[in-house]
Amino acid sequence: MPPALDAEAFATEQNALGQVWTLLGWTRDVAREGDWFTAHLGGRSVFVQRFREGLRAFENKCAHRFFPLRQGEAGNGPVICGFHHWRYNSDGMAIGIPKSEEMFGATPRDMGICLRPVEIEICGSLIFGRFASAGHTESLRAFLGPLFDIVRAMSPDGIAPLRGASVLPFNWRFAYEIALDDYHIVAVHSDTFGKRGYMLRDRVQYERSGPHSAYCAARVPDLLEGIAAACNAGTYRPSNDYLIMHLFPNIALVQTHVATVMGVRYVYLMLLQFVPLAPDTTQLRWWLWPSPFPTGDTPLQRVFRRISMPISLPLTRRGMLRILAEDNAVCAHLQAHARPDDGSPRLGAMEERIGWHNEAYRQVLEQAQRDAVRE
Ligand code: FES
Ligand SMILES: [Fe+2]
Image 1: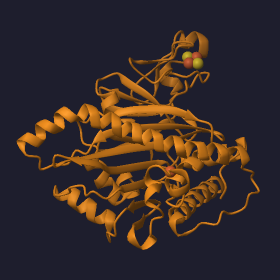
Image 2: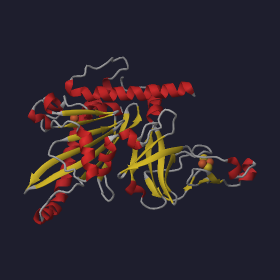
Image 3: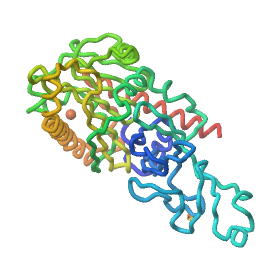
Image 4: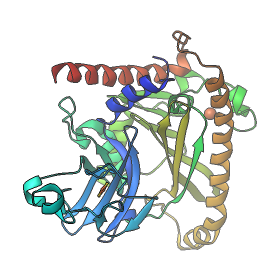
């Protein structure tokens, strides 16, 4: 299926994807009572907030006249609309409506007005959300399969990732599909990954896991189940092989060994999310942090690691942003020339995971269509 290039197709796509577990943000950003942050879900603005009763999320839209309740990226404070001062509680109920009986002839309680809720679940340090729907009732754990255990182990409490975001002038699926494509590296990343020439399909591991997939730069049968089991047993130690896990619909979690110096292995994790904003606009959000797994460093290596971290982390970030910039240049060209009648691409052996992602994408859209007919 081609990317949703016009407003109507994009709205249909986003309605469907809003019902799928989607990364909203990090627990560390809502650590204290009253903390909130905004995110995008299914083409809509939502906010996540920590109340005394726990974490909750709602569409970022007042139920009175649809003013955005939260402006900006993050803050702290009660949910009070800036337009007419309606106030909401942790269940999203409008509990404070100025001059309620004079203006509306009823008390807030009698009116029983509520914000649109977002279901949320946590995996490690990550908060995922979705809008409720009849067609998607599985838990986040069931949705992610073995990736749940892996993501949980890779993003434990207490990590403080470097982070960044940028707005890109193309459809999110161009960006996501290039991350699923190992065929372009010689042409597009000729100074880095592409230097080594074309990868051989039978030397790498591609694995499909429900709507998700993974790549490893070495043959490792039962890749994700194996990593998940080791994570759960506390025995997982990253290898030097490049590992990318693609969580449907729009996340790539990359584990990369960037160097070994003085016997110190530097392994980093990068989380990339391609957030759809419009048919031709995507927000790239990224987070970068050192692998949290035991390193086996000697005391001397531990000191060396601590001293060298302020160098290795920015270097890794620079390398990551450079690769992304090369990909983004390609995506901008794809966007400029894309037409809805382009037909189906011809996917080769190193682009197999794009086909898998397309299938999962089609299934979600078809499910949403069936749900709409049933309603
Ligand atoms: S729009 Fe929010 S109180 Fe009126
Ligand atoms: Fe690339």
